[in-house]
Length: 267
Image (tube, rainbow, N blue to C red; front, side, top):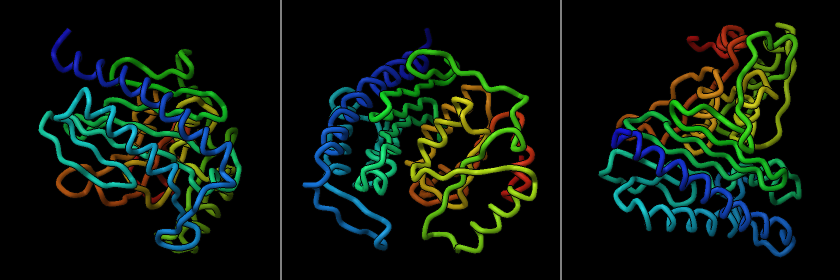
């Protein structure tokens, strides 16, 4: 085992452990959400609560205990540079809007980058008790069961996930949906981009597209999709671009070309 492989393995094991612990804390808040004080960020649809902040602080502390030299980017508290070559990219609760409104479509999303590449991806959905986990070269699993995508699944015999937010003009989202429907596809949106990317890795969705998304929302899902046999459009991680948004597209092998065309991206 090389030192690099050992480094990935150690972080992969830690990410799985942390995701379960963080998910339990988040689930406790979810079950008592009537007592939460909910704040808005950019607009009334962009919300945050103490649950998001506490879960992120927990994950940061666990990583710092064992890998103090690693970088860490979280949605709530931003980027701390590291010098180990590894950077953790975390959304403590992806799908805060479903979370505060009592819907189960939220998750804890943890990615680890090495050289700008997502080499670990762990997404835990506490309400469904589903742990999606992947590491570079190790494949992807759901609750320990290997995931492998089916080439025969396309936009015409499967369902595509579509994301939307206030960074993107409504007309852009509407055109994407129109193009997908005209091509014979159908779509869902459940309020959590990370969870929908996990569903791509699990074969529940044939792909996921969002015109503008942040690294903490997508990089764990990207690792999962790739290790399950799918494809993703690269997310810019060089320089200061890791903290900026970008188009996100991931797909199974049978939907890649169609979805890239619909999104106007290179397959």
